[in-house]
Length: 354
Length: 229
Image (cartoon, rainbow over all chains, first blue to last red; front, side, top):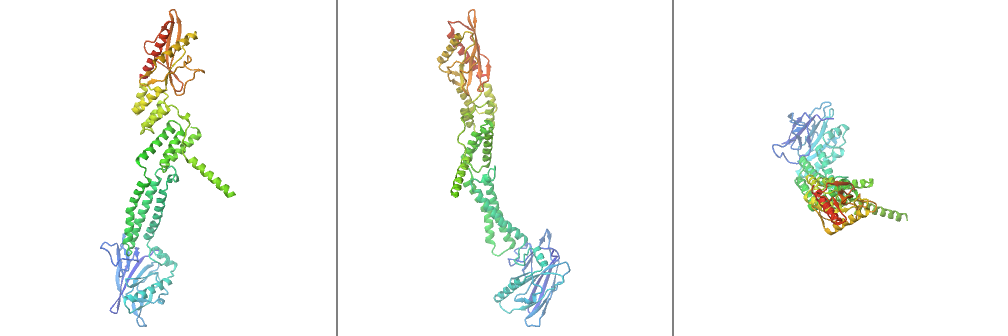
């Protein structure tokens, strides 16, 4: 099920008067429920920051620009019979087969009554910037009405009450199959934490690349690596490149996932990622130079033994002698799989009596 | 009990496996055949292109199966064979060469034997047989059959023979002589080589020794001429 629109509602309470700004997008867009910065970092910020910066909508989606299709003011609150409580009436009229997302940021110090939400539990709830925020899938025929209460207290005292509310709602969250599918289409899994598809991809890359990098690095340092990969030369060097690449991918995806999510205090992890990106090739080169590289004089000796082996095998037709030379070369360079293959060839030709 | 046996079997398998992986350190002596001209070219063009010194070692250990005349050496040089290798081929070919006196064909076998013995004596008297550019040639005192070799006199392996063969015929003045020089390569193929000038043509019993010596000298000159060809 695709979600056709997003309505972002910013409910304020000033000097005893409620007012709500409704901003709506009538097209598919990418939504982030988790803005970590207080406000846009620059003019070129790729997000629309809405509802007191409690929700962001990407300015582009699938290559298309995403702009608000409209904005209007409304007054959805009516005083309740009980002192200090108010009735909230959802003003957005949904159309059939056109489900959307409604994000509502309540004014500070206002808490909805949990029982009043029983019929239409939000799929997402959070306490952000001193405000309780609620998100629903506005499905046709299910208008959202609930009671909210003003808690007269300081900000520090309000926070535990808000947190308690959030926890209660999370316990109540039992979405319909329709809502769950809609949540998944927005990258929100099981009404729990916010997780964007890109984050998931980055996370997969992050974990897999690191594992690949570590395994490749370990295998690269096994002296007989070439025998695991048949007649291929420089298998260990190739693995070392894979190891370095894996760690680079890990570092980049770590940095990207952090920057994409804009999580607080992500700077150090991002620095770690980029440090890994820079360090991986250096470490790979150092490992190659100190562990894998054959010194030039040894390499020349290997080349000479291989050349003598080739000469004995192909020119002088003496496979026994060729095998002896290949064996000497292999003792000097056990990672050169091609020598192993030549040795096997010499052995076969010796067996055949060539 | 079973465990002990299994452990023993495993140990043997590991030892055998290790042995099979370990490169063979010995090769059969008979495998080292002398190098042909074509093989030397292949070595110089192919695997040992970067290691001419290794070709020198192979030439020294294997020997060659051809007489390196100037023509063949020029061919080798054109094929990229280095001067060091060419020198080694000459040196090695010299050490593989023998000048062999054969019985000249004559109904009188005693005369033929006397003549052959005189030729051997001449070879011994010369002490050093020098054939440029090969250097000194090892002495071969054994007289061969008229065709070079038979069941009694067999060729040494990997040896390049210069065979002094010929005919002795009776003539009114004594004996006429028709010496020939045959080059026998390492494979046993014999090649007649053109004789040098002034080959001895006759002798008497009085100057038999002198004529035999002249035939040896002429044979060596023929070999030199062939080497220079």
